[in-house]
Image 1 (cartoon, rainbow, N blue to C red):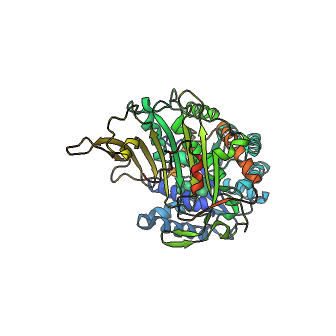
Image 2 (image 1 turned 60 degrees about the vertical axis):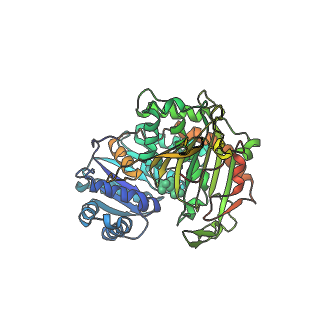
Image 3 (image 1 turned 135 degrees about the vertical axis):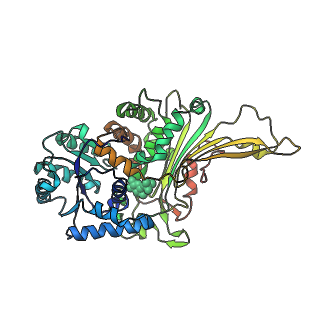
Length: 493
Ligand code: BG6
């Protein structure tokens, strides 16, 4: 968010050869290099388990950037970027690794005595070991100096999240901790706030008097790639819904904050989470739905079912699709259902927030039954299309007084405007110490409180899970969440 660099630092990436670093972090850091936003003298240390030296690492970076960026790849930028890196081999549970990191950070090249960002791009099960080892090797001292970036999911339920937070606080101050949820770094997610709070046209309609229900969809066509080890223990609820989708929900539903600073914004988000009606054990079935993909076809290609993916337990009951219905019991939203769904191997990659408005109090133009029941929608598409769409009724040209629905469409980005991934913004914020777009612990805690009863109930259903065909829009049975017959999932923009 902020423009100026104020924290010259070195940057240690734990898990630098993993999926997240490969897909998101390294390309984002490269783009910051390209935009000349990385300060002179800033260096990166990449930790991995592979038996590589600096050269092997650099050629790995080059290859992955070429594959990812195609014609946007620039050899000169890559060389500049690669020159900042050193590779450090070691096991996360081995304190020797951390002693070596400490020794390397002390070398003149790294700017002795400078600040360090530790980025935990690793499996949540390894967080504890890294935090303890940083401390044992003296890397968490002096307190208040270094920064620590923790990826989601933060814990696997409320108790483990609290334990992880306590552990972090034993060694780091809250100002040093950056709990990341990269959805908050997406331009189109930040645009939700601007759309709502900078337009007097919209804000008065944004409540229970006008809105029938809200749908939040994050659909992916990809499967679990090579992440079975992480995903099979995690599932769609913990991987996506508890964090990314809940964050989207808070941004859609929160009250305007008094100012746009980190705490004011997060206070409002917490109020939303605290107002979500708790789901009792008995009502889990009416409020949540899980399923797993079976084999099918994606983009013309046959893909295996989840249980056949390499590394997945043959009878795994892990969900790859999760849907939930929440009510926010406050003045603005009481009675308005928020339907959230996410899934892998769905028909299309599409993330959007769709708001359906109520019917007008009187149907004057009852020309055709269909028209009579088409309500207004506002659809804010987050990715891959970045757009805002409003569906309204107009008169059909002609002699009769018939109506039809048209959509007012606006593309979010204008031609030629660069499209950044969320990580560029967030990485700059870490460097600059701006925590506005990072998660405060009470947000994590309240989000777990909401989904924990669902996860507990699912954990008891050990021998059955619904399935859906890969390439479909998910299981029909998920429709049972809807409150009324005229509500259904909106799969198109
Ligand atoms: C990550 C999840 O947090 O978000 C992945 O662990 C998911 O499973 C990814 O694929 C989606 O992010 P994006 O930015 O590609 O929508």
